[in-house]
Each structure stands twice: as C-alpha cells, then as structure tokens.
Length: 150
Image (cartoon, rainbow, N blue to C red; front, top):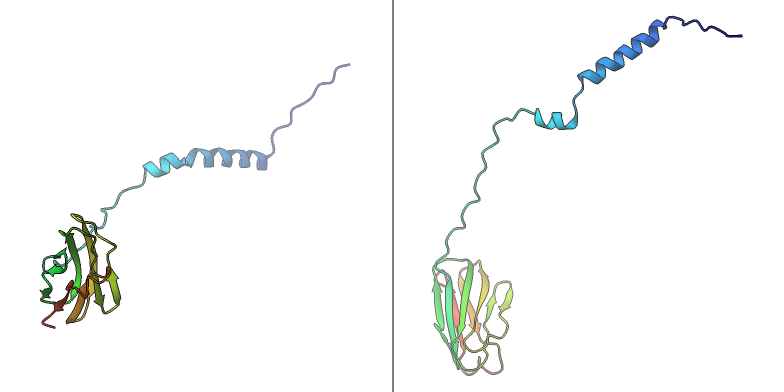
C-alpha cells in the first residue's frame, strides 16, 4: 500500500521570515567591502616636530696629561649641551661635571679616543669640571664651565 502525501501550502509567517532573511543577506556587505567603501576625508595636516633650538655650538674639550683645554669655557645661556671630549694624552682620562642635578661623568677614555657627555646646565652659574681618575684633578686637570656670565 502506498501512501500519498499531500503538500500543504506554506504558512504565511514562515514565508515572510524566509523572504526577510534573503533580503537582509542581499543588502549586507562583507568586511572587505566595508573597508574598501569608506570615503576618505581630507586628513588633518600633520605638523612636523619643531626643530630643537640650536644651542651655542656643542662644547668640546681636549684632555691630556694633566690639563683640560680649554680649562674655562663660557656659555652665553643655560640649556642642555653635548660635550665632545678627546683624549690626546698617553693614558686614560675621563670628564666629570658637577651640575645642579649632581655629578655627570664619562667612563675612562683611552688614549686617542673620544666620548660625549650630555649636560643639563639649566641655571646661570659656575660649574666645575675635571678628570676624576686617580690624582689627575690635583695635578691640574680641572676647570669650569661658566653659564650665562656666571
């Protein structure tokens, strides 16, 4: 015996839900489309970082047994300075500066070598500098940096 199945017509709420799903799927966009369809506004102009205010020329000092050249250095106004140090002597030397934030120094600089030291001398005044190795300071490797007429 065979049974025949009769198809019933679909119910209206089911048809409406299926139609709504098809419409929503057709109107959507993929993430690729979303990122490629964004309109571009004119970007805000970027400002280049301000160039640092040039300091009076970077400072330099030459060290040799048992002197600093120059031993006294004048700087017209307070600021941050880079000091280039060259050891033209035959033994290691270093440079130490007693600044407002304490002492700042290089490590030992070998004969014929160079080093750099960053100084923050933010107030006018007289700042002592010297070679801190052994008795080099006592033997004449000392001087001062005069800032702003200090």
